[in-house]
Amino acid sequence: MRQSLVVGNWKMNGSAASIQSLLEGIKQGIATVNKTAVGVCPPYVYLSQVSTSLAGTPVACGVQNVSEQDSGAYTGEIAVSMLKDFGCRYVIVGHSERRNIYGETDEVVAKKFTKTQAGGLIPILCVGELLEEREAGNTENVVQRQLDAVLNSSGVAALSNAVIAYEPVWAIGTGKTASPQQAQDVHAFIRQHIAKQDAAIAAKVQILYGGSMKGSNAAELIAMADVDGGLIGGAALNAEEFLTICRAGD
Ligand code: PEP
Image: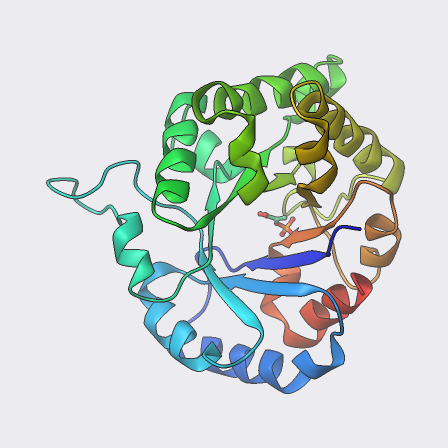
């Protein structure tokens, strides 16, 4: 039985003050979450504040991106080794906003995945199709291509210490959620694809759904057999809403 995991992706939102009050709200309510593992990914500049505030709580800290390089002349980038100074557990890699706005290729995402694991952190690998790709019947091809980039460079064993997030791009921040069956179909496809290489790892890997998940639809999505939790954008900016989603994973 896979443990549910719910991770908040705060994206480029918040201020020191608003993040503090969000943290207080999450900490106040976290005891109402029983079994689901919980994490939050703030903007880098608030990492110190967030990791200090969450120390000693069951809420893990993560980030939204990382450099594929170790150190050096890479202006504006953040290395995995730096994240370790803040007790980070998760790194989101290959979020569709990184792929589509900042041009991250499958190859770059695969390098970020490898670096994250080499540094002892857990990558949350995002995969998902654009609306036109879905409409053209290419959802599985796209997701398989994104997965294969990582499988080919890191090997299937790497997925024993990683999380996958299926995030249909047309559902992110749009208010349009994939139906539970649409999510389940792609999650099952992902698991079957991994199982071709290693059935035990496929059975164990957590596959999160992301795309306008909120308190009112989380339970029906997470109830699907291959949906193991959520990667949450907008709804993670409200403590009560976020905790409702976390409890749906219980
Ligand atoms: C995301 O960007 O990972 C996401 C799922 O966003 P939202 O929940 O706002 O659709």
